[in-house]
Length: 180
Image (cartoon, rainbow, N blue to C red; front, side, top):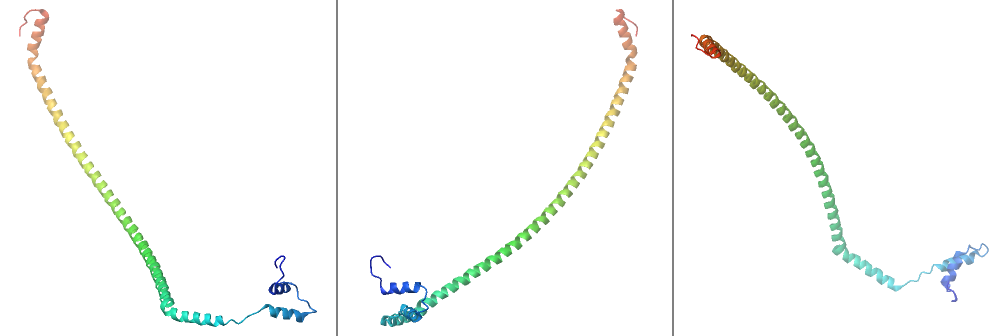
């Protein structure tokens, strides 16, 4: 209800519906309820219904069916793309697993090859060091033998020159010539 204005019939009916029903005057309440639902028949309704039905019949093959086909095709493509993505993801996982296994195999082979090369290098080092020691020992022995021969040669020369040296030393010490 609005203030200061007389209540319309609809406002009065709504107000009556809000009140609890009167058990004594039940017939009046039923009449009030029946009058609250007032459906007037309007001839424009038939025209609007016919127009709506015509639009549905005309637009269905022209607009609705193609639009539904586009939506269905888009849904199929979306699902197809999702399936393709799942397949590619699974394939990528398989390839990654295969790659990791191959990488591990190559690492093992590289480690074996590295150990083999280290072993060969160690053997070669041992061989070269042995040969160097043998060569050094041979050179040392040759040098010792040559030094021993030179020492012996010098002793012999000193022994042969000993009387002459003794005479010269005595001459210098005494200041006069001593016989040789």
